[in-house]
Image (cartoon, rainbow over all chains, first blue to last red; front, side, top):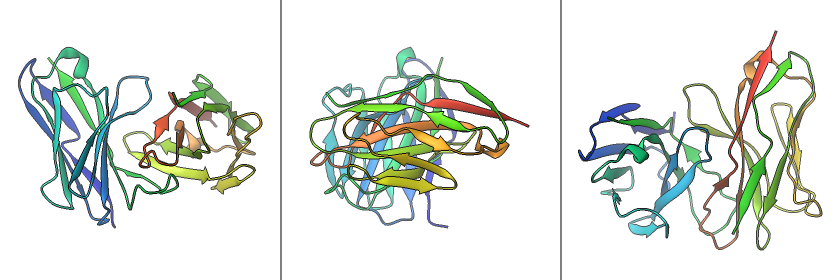
Length: 115
Length: 113
């Protein structure tokens, strides 16, 4: 089945130790999104790629970066994780971003713990 | 800025009870509205959507109507099942907003036999 895959599902890192989360998709969608969801809060968009065009949200900390080497894969890099970065990280895709009606397809998420 | 407000949970119901989860929004322009559901251990799945005023989205027995006059998109189901136990998120996206989703905080539903 076409889907959005995130690896790993659970990631434990140490304070200040760089970590990379992975997302892949078989939908061949142009747009890939990364959301952060802290405990009992709403998912919040960090950034998105439209093809190779990177778009950062204004309030996303510099500590968070992303790479999209090809259509299928997108990575979230946290350069120096702090305790406040512990959260569920959700990857999503959509076919396009021109309209506001396109469905976003989500992966199962990666739960990040920072010790 | 744009925002979504959902009723707080958890909501606990007996099987076959009627469900309402309230959702209101604040947005400039004319947003599209969505309900996503997250089952335990899984990602978010689109449950239903509506893209203009008075549209009704429906799926799997769930319904929600886009009410512009009250800026609401309440989720309803006539008879819930144990398998409906999940977290439900109301969300919006606005034209020109590159399809960015703005979510409510989510409402946890627990259905008991």
